[in-house]
Amino acid sequence: MNRQTNEVARLRRKCIDDMIRYIEEDAAAAQERGDLLNSGSKDGKEFFDAMNDVMVWAGKPNLADFLPVSKWLDPQGIKRNMVRDMGRALGIVSNFVKERVDELKLAEEQETKDLLDILLEHTGEGKQGPDSISNQIVIIIILEMFFAGSETTSSTIEWAMAELLRKPDSMKKVKEEINRVIGPQRKVEESDIDNLPSQRKVEESDIDNLPYFQAVIKETLRLHPVIPLLLPRNAMQDTDYMGYFIPKETQIFVNVWAIGRDPETWEDPLAFKPERFLGSKIDYKGQNFELLPFGSGRQICLGISLAHKVVHLGLATLLNSFDWELRNNICPETIDMNERVGITTRKLKPLEAIPKKRVMDAR
Ligand code: HEM
Image (cartoon, rainbow, N blue to C red; front, side, top):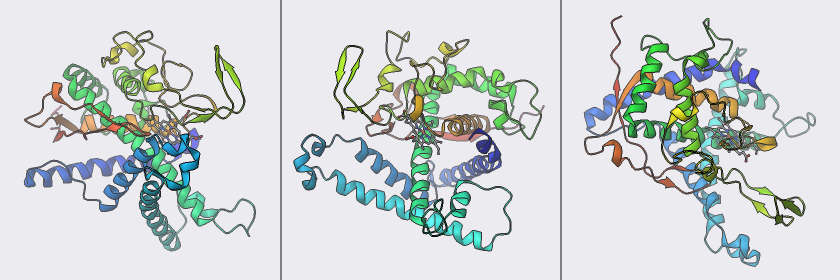
Protein backbone atom coordinates (compact mmCIF):
# COMPACT_ATOMS: atom_id res chain seq x y z
CA MET A 1 0.00 0.00 0.00
CA ASN A 2 2.80 2.38 1.00
CA ARG A 3 4.77 1.53 -2.14
CA GLN A 4 1.74 2.19 -4.34
CA THR A 5 1.04 5.47 -2.54
CA ASN A 6 4.65 6.54 -3.18
CA GLU A 7 4.47 5.61 -6.85
CA VAL A 8 1.78 8.23 -7.51
CA ALA A 9 3.64 11.05 -5.71
CA ARG A 10 3.86 12.80 -9.10
CA LEU A 11 0.04 12.98 -9.30
CA ARG A 12 -0.19 14.49 -5.81
CA ARG A 13 2.50 17.03 -6.74
CA LYS A 14 0.40 18.03 -9.75
CA CYS A 15 -2.78 18.35 -7.64
CA ILE A 16 -0.99 20.54 -5.09
CA ASP A 17 0.50 22.72 -7.87
CA ASP A 18 -2.96 23.03 -9.44
CA MET A 19 -4.41 24.02 -6.06
CA ILE A 20 -1.88 26.83 -5.67
CA ARG A 21 -2.52 28.00 -9.24
CA TYR A 22 -6.31 28.01 -8.65
CA ILE A 23 -5.86 30.00 -5.45
CA GLU A 24 -3.68 32.53 -7.25
CA GLU A 25 -6.14 32.88 -10.12
CA ASP A 26 -9.15 32.95 -7.79
CA ALA A 27 -7.48 35.42 -5.45
CA ALA A 28 -6.72 37.81 -8.31
CA ALA A 29 -10.32 37.59 -9.60
CA ALA A 30 -11.73 37.88 -6.08
CA GLN A 31 -9.68 41.00 -5.41
CA GLU A 32 -11.22 42.60 -8.50
CA ARG A 33 -14.70 41.58 -7.37
CA GLY A 34 -13.93 42.68 -3.81
CA ASP A 35 -14.84 39.36 -2.19
CA LEU A 36 -13.08 36.18 -1.11
CA LEU A 37 -12.26 33.05 -3.04
CA ASN A 38 -14.95 31.43 -5.07
CA SER A 39 -13.83 28.30 -6.83
CA GLY A 40 -14.80 28.29 -10.49
CA SER A 41 -15.40 24.51 -10.62
CA LYS A 42 -19.17 23.93 -10.80
CA ASP A 43 -18.86 20.15 -10.40
CA GLY A 44 -16.39 20.56 -7.53
CA LYS A 45 -18.80 22.76 -5.61
CA GLU A 46 -21.80 20.55 -6.40
CA PHE A 47 -19.90 17.46 -5.21
CA PHE A 48 -18.71 19.24 -2.06
CA ASP A 49 -22.28 20.34 -1.23
CA ALA A 50 -23.80 16.90 -1.93
CA MET A 51 -21.10 15.25 0.21
CA ASN A 52 -21.76 17.71 3.01
CA ASP A 53 -25.48 16.85 2.95
CA VAL A 54 -24.79 13.10 2.90
CA MET A 55 -22.50 13.48 5.95
CA VAL A 56 -25.21 15.41 7.80
CA TRP A 57 -27.92 12.77 7.06
CA ALA A 58 -25.52 9.96 7.95
CA GLY A 59 -24.86 11.53 11.36
CA LYS A 60 -28.50 12.31 12.26
CA PRO A 61 -30.06 10.11 14.95
CA ASN A 62 -32.79 8.21 13.13
CA LEU A 63 -36.04 7.46 14.96
CA ALA A 64 -36.50 4.44 12.69
CA ASP A 65 -33.43 2.80 14.30
CA PHE A 66 -35.20 2.86 17.66
CA LEU A 67 -38.69 2.08 16.34
CA PRO A 68 -38.09 -0.39 13.50
CA VAL A 69 -41.83 -0.57 12.73
CA SER A 70 -41.65 3.05 11.57
CA LYS A 71 -38.83 2.28 9.11
CA TRP A 72 -41.02 2.25 6.01
CA LEU A 73 -42.53 5.61 7.05
CA ASP A 74 -39.08 7.23 7.18
CA PRO A 75 -40.53 9.72 9.73
CA GLN A 76 -37.71 12.29 9.50
CA GLY A 77 -37.21 11.89 5.76
CA ILE A 78 -33.58 10.87 6.38
CA LYS A 79 -33.60 7.96 3.93
CA ARG A 80 -35.37 10.03 1.27
CA ASN A 81 -32.90 12.88 1.57
CA MET A 82 -29.94 10.50 1.69
CA VAL A 83 -31.04 8.77 -1.53
CA ARG A 84 -31.46 12.16 -3.24
CA ASP A 85 -28.06 13.57 -2.18
CA MET A 86 -26.19 10.32 -2.71
CA GLY A 87 -27.71 10.36 -6.23
CA ARG A 88 -26.29 13.85 -6.85
CA ALA A 89 -22.80 12.71 -5.81
CA LEU A 90 -23.07 9.47 -7.80
CA GLY A 91 -24.04 11.45 -10.92
CA ILE A 92 -20.88 13.56 -10.70
CA VAL A 93 -18.65 10.55 -10.09
CA SER A 94 -20.27 8.65 -13.00
CA ASN A 95 -19.40 11.53 -15.34
CA PHE A 96 -15.86 11.59 -14.00
CA VAL A 97 -15.48 7.83 -14.60
CA LYS A 98 -16.98 8.15 -18.07
CA GLU A 99 -14.53 10.93 -18.97
CA ARG A 100 -11.65 8.68 -17.92
CA VAL A 101 -13.00 5.75 -19.97
CA ASP A 102 -13.13 8.04 -23.01
CA GLU A 103 -9.62 9.36 -22.34
CA LEU A 104 -8.25 5.83 -22.01
CA LYS A 105 -9.68 4.89 -25.39
CA LEU A 106 -7.51 7.60 -26.98
CA ALA A 107 -4.47 7.22 -24.72
CA GLU A 108 -1.23 5.45 -25.52
CA GLU A 109 0.46 3.22 -22.92
CA GLN A 110 0.29 5.01 -19.53
CA GLU A 111 3.39 5.54 -17.43
CA THR A 112 1.64 5.89 -14.10
CA LYS A 113 -1.69 4.36 -13.25
CA ASP A 114 -3.97 5.51 -10.50
CA LEU A 115 -6.64 3.52 -8.67
CA LEU A 116 -9.30 4.28 -11.28
CA ASP A 117 -7.08 3.13 -14.17
CA ILE A 118 -6.45 -0.15 -12.38
CA LEU A 119 -10.11 -0.69 -11.53
CA LEU A 120 -11.08 -0.02 -15.13
CA GLU A 121 -8.63 -2.69 -16.30
CA HIS A 122 -10.79 -5.18 -14.40
CA THR A 123 -14.23 -4.09 -15.53
CA GLY A 124 -16.62 -6.53 -17.11
CA GLU A 125 -19.86 -8.17 -16.23
CA GLY A 126 -18.34 -11.20 -14.54
CA LYS A 127 -18.09 -13.24 -17.73
CA GLN A 128 -14.35 -12.66 -18.03
CA GLY A 129 -13.64 -14.27 -14.69
CA PRO A 130 -14.30 -13.96 -11.00
CA ASP A 131 -12.03 -10.92 -10.59
CA SER A 132 -13.95 -8.70 -13.02
CA ILE A 133 -16.07 -5.93 -11.55
CA SER A 134 -19.00 -4.04 -12.99
CA ASN A 135 -18.91 -0.39 -14.01
CA GLN A 136 -21.40 0.42 -11.25
CA ILE A 137 -19.09 -1.08 -8.61
CA VAL A 138 -16.18 0.96 -10.00
CA ILE A 139 -18.28 4.11 -9.63
CA ILE A 140 -19.22 3.18 -6.05
CA ILE A 141 -15.60 2.43 -5.06
CA ILE A 142 -14.47 5.80 -6.49
CA LEU A 143 -17.36 7.58 -4.73
CA GLU A 144 -16.37 5.92 -1.46
CA MET A 145 -12.74 6.95 -1.92
CA PHE A 146 -13.80 10.55 -2.69
CA PHE A 147 -16.04 10.59 0.38
CA ALA A 148 -13.43 8.98 2.63
CA GLY A 149 -10.48 10.96 1.35
CA SER A 150 -11.58 14.45 0.39
CA GLU A 151 -13.55 16.03 3.21
CA THR A 152 -11.37 14.36 5.85
CA THR A 153 -8.15 15.85 4.49
CA SER A 154 -9.59 19.24 3.47
CA SER A 155 -11.32 19.69 6.84
CA THR A 156 -8.15 18.78 8.74
CA ILE A 157 -6.22 21.41 6.76
CA GLU A 158 -9.01 23.95 7.35
CA TRP A 159 -9.05 23.28 11.13
CA ALA A 160 -5.26 23.52 11.28
CA MET A 161 -5.28 26.82 9.43
CA ALA A 162 -8.07 28.16 11.68
CA GLU A 163 -6.14 27.17 14.82
CA LEU A 164 -2.95 28.77 13.49
CA LEU A 165 -4.78 32.00 12.61
CA ARG A 166 -6.26 32.02 16.11
CA LYS A 167 -2.80 31.60 17.57
CA PRO A 168 -0.38 33.96 15.81
CA ASP A 169 2.43 32.71 18.03
CA SER A 170 2.10 29.17 16.68
CA MET A 171 1.67 30.52 13.14
CA LYS A 172 4.92 32.45 13.50
CA LYS A 173 6.79 29.41 14.81
CA VAL A 174 5.54 27.06 12.10
CA LYS A 175 6.28 29.55 9.33
CA GLU A 176 9.77 30.17 10.65
CA GLU A 177 10.40 26.43 10.69
CA ILE A 178 9.08 25.88 7.16
CA ASN A 179 11.02 28.91 5.97
CA ARG A 180 14.21 27.63 7.53
CA VAL A 181 13.89 24.09 6.17
CA ILE A 182 12.28 24.76 2.80
CA GLY A 183 12.21 28.48 2.10
CA PRO A 184 10.07 30.26 -0.49
CA GLN A 185 12.51 29.49 -3.31
CA ARG A 186 11.42 25.92 -3.70
CA LYS A 187 8.31 23.81 -3.45
CA VAL A 188 7.51 21.65 -0.47
CA GLU A 189 8.28 18.05 -1.38
CA GLU A 190 6.84 14.94 0.23
CA SER A 191 10.41 14.11 1.17
CA ASP A 192 10.40 17.17 3.40
CA ILE A 193 7.77 15.50 5.50
CA ASP A 194 8.78 11.89 5.43
CA ASN A 195 11.73 9.74 4.73
CA LEU A 196 10.66 8.77 1.25
CA PRO A 197 12.78 7.76 -1.67
CA SER A 198 12.36 11.03 -3.52
CA GLN A 199 13.19 12.92 -6.64
CA ARG A 200 15.84 14.85 -4.74
CA LYS A 201 18.34 13.85 -2.11
CA VAL A 202 17.13 14.09 1.43
CA GLU A 203 20.04 15.19 3.52
CA GLU A 204 18.72 14.06 6.84
CA SER A 205 15.54 12.52 7.91
CA ASP A 206 13.38 15.52 7.00
CA ILE A 207 10.66 14.49 9.37
CA ASP A 208 12.99 15.58 12.14
CA ASN A 209 13.46 18.90 10.40
CA LEU A 210 9.81 19.90 10.72
CA PRO A 211 8.99 18.79 14.26
CA TYR A 212 6.86 21.80 15.09
CA PHE A 213 4.85 21.43 11.89
CA GLN A 214 4.31 17.73 12.65
CA ALA A 215 3.14 18.74 16.12
CA VAL A 216 0.68 21.26 14.64
CA ILE A 217 -0.99 18.47 12.64
CA LYS A 218 -1.13 16.13 15.65
CA GLU A 219 -2.60 18.87 17.83
CA THR A 220 -5.20 19.64 15.13
CA LEU A 221 -6.19 15.97 14.88
CA ARG A 222 -6.39 15.74 18.69
CA LEU A 223 -8.85 18.63 18.93
CA HIS A 224 -10.63 18.10 15.61
CA PRO A 225 -10.76 14.42 14.63
CA VAL A 226 -12.92 14.68 11.52
CA ILE A 227 -14.71 11.38 12.16
CA PRO A 228 -15.39 12.06 15.85
CA LEU A 229 -17.19 8.78 16.66
CA LEU A 230 -15.23 6.62 14.17
CA LEU A 231 -17.36 4.26 12.06
CA PRO A 232 -19.99 2.36 14.06
CA ARG A 233 -19.25 -1.17 15.24
CA ASN A 234 -21.68 -3.95 16.12
CA ALA A 235 -21.10 -6.32 19.04
CA MET A 236 -20.94 -9.78 17.44
CA GLN A 237 -21.68 -11.50 20.74
CA ASP A 238 -22.66 -10.72 24.32
CA THR A 239 -19.56 -9.10 25.81
CA ASP A 240 -18.38 -8.17 29.25
CA TYR A 241 -16.08 -5.20 28.85
CA MET A 242 -14.41 -3.71 31.91
CA GLY A 243 -17.46 -4.49 33.99
CA TYR A 244 -19.97 -3.24 31.40
CA PHE A 245 -22.32 -5.75 29.81
CA ILE A 246 -22.69 -5.17 26.05
CA PRO A 247 -25.46 -7.30 24.51
CA LYS A 248 -24.99 -8.90 21.08
CA GLU A 249 -25.98 -6.59 18.16
CA THR A 250 -25.38 -3.39 20.17
CA GLN A 251 -24.17 -0.56 17.97
CA ILE A 252 -21.02 0.91 19.46
CA PHE A 253 -19.43 4.31 18.87
CA VAL A 254 -15.93 5.17 20.05
CA ASN A 255 -15.84 8.85 20.96
CA VAL A 256 -12.33 9.85 19.90
CA TRP A 257 -13.35 13.52 20.03
CA ALA A 258 -13.91 13.22 23.80
CA ILE A 259 -10.79 11.04 24.26
CA GLY A 260 -8.71 13.81 22.66
CA ARG A 261 -10.12 16.35 25.13
CA ASP A 262 -10.02 14.20 28.26
CA PRO A 263 -8.62 16.32 31.14
CA GLU A 264 -7.32 13.16 32.81
CA THR A 265 -5.03 12.54 29.87
CA TRP A 266 -4.27 15.98 28.46
CA GLU A 267 -3.10 19.02 30.38
CA ASP A 268 -5.12 22.12 29.49
CA PRO A 269 -7.03 19.93 27.01
CA LEU A 270 -9.00 22.61 25.19
CA ALA A 271 -5.96 24.76 24.38
CA PHE A 272 -4.20 24.46 21.02
CA LYS A 273 -0.62 23.74 22.11
CA PRO A 274 1.46 21.91 19.49
CA GLU A 275 4.37 22.10 21.96
CA ARG A 276 2.80 19.25 23.95
CA PHE A 277 3.88 16.85 21.17
CA LEU A 278 7.48 18.07 20.95
CA GLY A 279 9.71 15.32 22.30
CA SER A 280 6.66 13.08 22.81
CA LYS A 281 6.36 9.65 21.18
CA ILE A 282 2.58 9.90 20.91
CA ASP A 283 1.46 9.39 17.32
CA TYR A 284 -1.86 8.91 15.52
CA LYS A 285 -1.06 5.60 13.87
CA GLY A 286 -3.35 3.56 16.11
CA GLN A 287 -0.93 2.51 18.86
CA ASN A 288 -1.57 5.38 21.30
CA PHE A 289 -5.14 5.11 22.48
CA GLU A 290 -5.27 8.71 23.71
CA LEU A 291 -4.97 9.92 20.08
CA LEU A 292 -7.07 7.95 17.60
CA PRO A 293 -8.19 10.28 14.77
CA PHE A 294 -7.70 7.42 12.26
CA GLY A 295 -9.11 4.70 14.50
CA SER A 296 -7.10 1.61 15.35
CA GLY A 297 -6.86 -2.10 14.71
CA ARG A 298 -8.41 -3.92 11.78
CA GLN A 299 -10.76 -1.10 10.87
CA ILE A 300 -8.12 1.66 10.98
CA CYS A 301 -8.40 4.23 8.16
CA LEU A 302 -7.36 2.54 4.94
CA GLY A 303 -5.91 5.80 3.62
CA ILE A 304 -3.81 6.75 6.64
CA SER A 305 -0.48 6.88 4.80
CA LEU A 306 -2.01 8.86 1.92
CA ALA A 307 -3.74 11.21 4.38
CA HIS A 308 -0.47 11.75 6.24
CA LYS A 309 1.23 12.87 3.03
CA VAL A 310 -1.64 14.95 1.63
CA VAL A 311 -2.36 16.85 4.85
CA HIS A 312 1.30 17.70 5.47
CA LEU A 313 2.12 18.50 1.87
CA GLY A 314 -1.08 20.53 1.41
CA LEU A 315 -0.82 22.64 4.55
CA ALA A 316 2.94 23.18 4.27
CA THR A 317 2.50 24.34 0.66
CA LEU A 318 -0.32 26.72 1.61
CA LEU A 319 1.82 28.20 4.39
CA ASN A 320 4.94 28.37 2.26
CA SER A 321 3.25 29.95 -0.77
CA PHE A 322 1.07 32.57 0.92
CA ASP A 323 0.76 34.73 3.98
CA TRP A 324 -2.78 34.28 5.27
CA GLU A 325 -4.70 37.22 6.68
CA LEU A 326 -8.10 37.60 8.28
CA ARG A 327 -10.72 39.99 6.96
CA ASN A 328 -10.84 43.44 8.55
CA ASN A 329 -13.83 42.71 10.77
CA ILE A 330 -12.43 39.42 12.12
CA CYS A 331 -9.65 39.03 14.68
CA PRO A 332 -8.07 35.80 15.98
CA GLU A 333 -10.36 35.73 19.02
CA THR A 334 -13.55 36.01 16.96
CA ILE A 335 -12.91 33.21 14.44
CA ASP A 336 -15.98 30.98 14.62
CA MET A 337 -14.81 27.50 15.71
CA ASN A 338 -18.23 25.85 15.94
CA GLU A 339 -18.62 22.43 14.41
CA ARG A 340 -21.27 21.25 11.99
CA VAL A 341 -22.66 18.04 13.43
CA GLY A 342 -22.74 15.01 11.17
CA ILE A 343 -20.79 11.81 10.75
CA THR A 344 -17.86 14.14 10.06
CA THR A 345 -17.09 17.41 11.83
CA ARG A 346 -16.58 20.20 9.38
CA LYS A 347 -16.36 23.85 10.39
CA LEU A 348 -19.92 25.14 10.67
CA LYS A 349 -18.84 28.41 9.11
CA PRO A 350 -16.13 27.94 6.49
CA LEU A 351 -12.88 29.68 7.35
CA GLU A 352 -12.44 32.94 5.48
CA ALA A 353 -8.83 33.98 5.02
CA ILE A 354 -7.09 36.09 2.41
CA PRO A 355 -4.01 34.64 0.69
CA LYS A 356 -1.21 37.11 0.01
CA LYS A 357 1.41 35.70 -2.34
CA ARG A 358 4.74 35.56 -0.55
CA VAL A 359 7.48 37.70 -2.01
CA MET A 360 10.58 35.69 -2.76
CA ASP A 361 13.48 36.43 -0.45
CA ALA A 362 16.34 37.98 -2.38
CA ARG A 363 18.94 35.61 -0.97
C1 HEM B 1 -7.04 13.49 7.71
C2 HEM B 1 -7.55 12.59 6.90
C3 HEM B 1 -8.30 11.36 7.32
C4 HEM B 1 -8.82 11.01 8.55
C5 HEM B 1 -8.76 11.79 9.85
C6 HEM B 1 -9.45 9.72 8.39
C7 HEM B 1 -10.07 9.02 9.41
C8 HEM B 1 -10.70 7.82 9.25
C9 HEM B 1 -11.39 7.12 10.30
C10 HEM B 1 -11.51 7.60 11.74
C11 HEM B 1 -11.91 5.99 9.77
C12 HEM B 1 -12.72 4.94 10.53
C13 HEM B 1 -11.80 4.05 11.31
C14 HEM B 1 -12.49 3.28 12.38
O1 HEM B 1 -13.73 3.27 12.43
O2 HEM B 1 -11.78 2.69 13.21
C15 HEM B 1 -11.57 5.97 8.37
C16 HEM B 1 -11.92 4.96 7.49
C17 HEM B 1 -11.57 4.94 6.16
N1 HEM B 1 -10.75 5.84 5.51
FE1 HEM B 1 -9.94 7.51 6.33
N2 HEM B 1 -9.32 9.30 7.10
C18 HEM B 1 -8.61 10.27 6.41
C19 HEM B 1 -8.25 10.23 5.08
C20 HEM B 1 -8.48 9.18 4.22
C21 HEM B 1 -8.00 9.09 2.86
C22 HEM B 1 -7.13 10.14 2.16
C23 HEM B 1 -8.48 7.93 2.34
C24 HEM B 1 -8.25 7.36 0.96
C25 HEM B 1 -8.81 7.74 -0.09
C26 HEM B 1 -9.26 7.29 3.37
C27 HEM B 1 -9.92 6.09 3.21
C28 HEM B 1 -10.64 5.46 4.20
C29 HEM B 1 -11.43 4.25 3.98
C30 HEM B 1 -11.61 3.50 2.66
C31 HEM B 1 -12.00 3.92 5.22
C32 HEM B 1 -12.93 2.75 5.53
C33 HEM B 1 -12.10 1.62 6.11
C34 HEM B 1 -12.99 0.45 6.53
O3 HEM B 1 -14.17 0.59 6.72
O4 HEM B 1 -12.41 -0.62 6.67
N3 HEM B 1 -9.23 8.07 4.50
N4 HEM B 1 -10.82 7.08 8.08
